[in-house]
Amino acid sequence: MRAVVVHGPGDVRVEERPDPSPGPGDVLVAMEWGGVCGSDISYALHGASGTAVLRHPLVLGHEVAGRVAVLGEGVTSYAVGDAVTVHPATPSDEPLPARLMGRTNLHREVRYLGSAAFDPHVDGGFSTYKVVRASQLRLLPAGVSTQLGALAEPLGVALHAVGRLGPLDDREVLVNGAGSIGCLVVAALKARGAGRVVAADVSVAALDQARMLGADDVFSSTELPEDVELVVEASGVPDALGPLLRATARGGTVVQVGNLPIAPTPAVLADLVTREITWTGSYRFVDEITEAVELLAKGIDLSPLIAGTADLDDAPAAIRAAGSTAGKLLLHLG
Image (tube, rainbow, N blue to C red; front, side, top):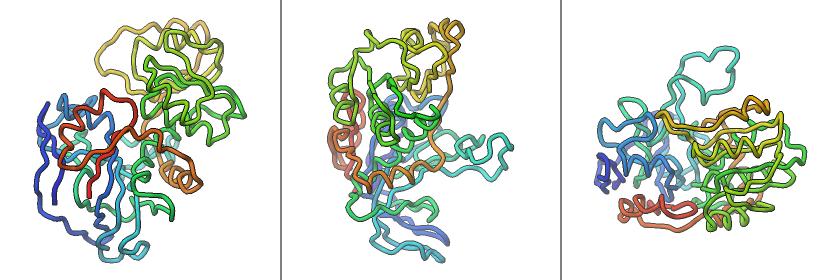
């Protein structure tokens, strides 16, 4: 098979590797589409993503979908040819404390497809074939293409962030940062019953995509609306925090889903105290990918998010360029 492998900063190659075989309880998936995430771009450009640093070559990709090719022993819940997407996470077996019950995304060790967070790394799904546990698969209903199925994972991230806001009750929500996750947060908010959803960004192209995904209004990040009770920060830009907290209503809530830098970085946070704002994090998801598939089946239209496609052989150059374009680049894997 062929796979997209990062060896270090600026060193991404398409390599041939032995075809894998599924063990008991596993499924061999013939991959068809993969979405390029910010972490894939970071590994490709810098050899690291956040605190995860490459120690050896890594197959990229965790936003993937394809078709069942071979069933491992004991797998009866799927059939060869089924269209599926993949939940990328494998939490550890360590019991969670009672206060975190059910929040499997917060295990101290979660192995994720295409991640260098632990050694050995976990190879991702930007490859012709990938073996995964049957329990990681989510069946794509008739009418949901594998191309759209590759967007189920990032939509799951967005749905988890929306869930961290609490009850929506037709309320207004501001989404700061209209990159892929921010735009998907807009779509998730509308699907979950939010009232007026507004998006902010410095990019006109990104704001156009936010409108197509359901934003009722858009703003430049330099001219935010005032007194918004519910806010999702999806840019991960520390300089944005001061103005955003000022735009948040007194007693309001800000959910931080945009990854912030790991190095000390100045940020203006005074309004967090004086406006008594609740600032809470959102990390990956638990099982919201299942809801994402259900929303795709109901017809949620995420196609405006797709900025373009590239063949697997062109993946190295496409991944390097993906960070400079609005929307989601999809790789055609097979």
